[in-house]
Length: 253
Ligand code: URA
Image (cartoon, rainbow, N blue to C red; front, side):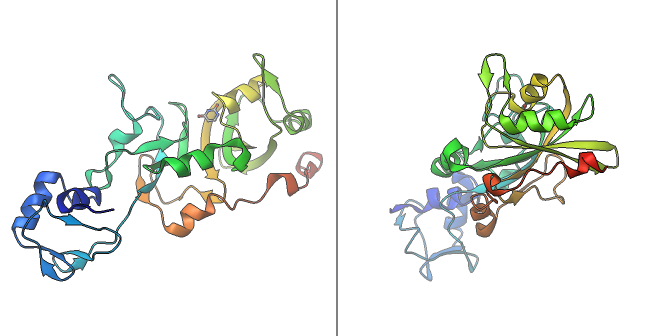
């Protein structure tokens, strides 16, 4: 669909509307090899080749960002009082229309996807898509075999029931991490599932969505663009239903 050159350049994170207008006026922008004089002229992002200072602008219809969410910020687009994940975006990655696809609690850390592609977010979050999210939790008391079996058959808390989930433990330098995989995204779900078995989550971090892992190189609050293959990997996580339940680690610690 044709759109104004200045709007296109701003949408590709090349500056504000004012800045890109100046860029066009300076003669730095070409459309199909010819200098563009008018920032308001129409171009077709899918058909025309736009370059800035000789560098071709790779057209991104949507933006897909991975954030390592720190504790203490809201998974929201704006808030009058508190800092949101969008406030953490560097200006060169900010675009109107971005939102966090799926929420993490204020005190939850880890993998958060930020995009302006509503369709992808909807597909990722729909329970029928079976996109599993993997969380690492620190819990008040150690995970037991009974907890694993309870999660496996589905627990209920506060009148709400949760779909079967896989629970196991992994060794960390700080102790034993409880690993939980869920495909729903109900309010405070992981915390409430542990409450349902008489335990308590002390800290929670999301490590994986579908087949997409949190980039370990991203510091807390860090954000980067996702590659196309990474976006696709969200939908090719291994199917939970096909995996056997393994209790060996509890029987032979
Ligand atoms: N479950 C929770 O309890 N909190 C989160 O932030 C995510 C999943």
